[in-house]
Length: 134
Image 1 (cartoon, rainbow, N blue to C red):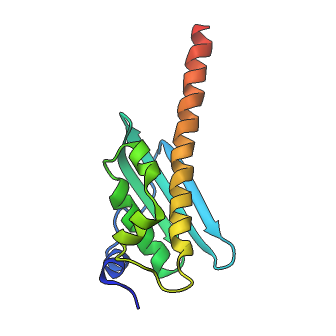
Image 2 (cartoon, rainbow, N blue to C red):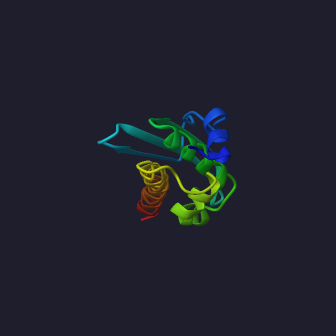
Image 3 (cartoon, rainbow, N blue to C red):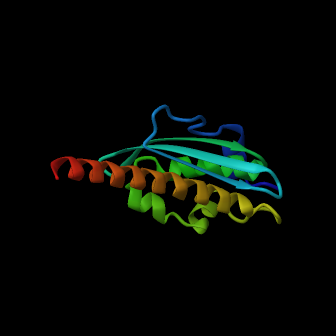
């Protein structure tokens, strides 16, 4: 039913947990099945320096969160934001079982929300500094 890559992430998930004092936080959920994914990221010099995730839900959701953390760790935030459903699907060994594709969408959405949160915080900080110099 599940491919070996997905099973590996399920039984040995990577980067599980939430980072303390993250630079960005994102969460996404699927009302119909109850799955929820959360990402926290720490950014240094435009690079994903640390990432943590929590996933509550089906096996593909948990595995996709783990796979995503491995895909983005050490990558530029631009590259992290550009990771596609297909990239994530490949990291899990290929097609997911019918009815489980939503896991890819949830993980991508939660990651994008975490990166957006980081960018918004950076913009607010820049506005504060500019206002102070004003």
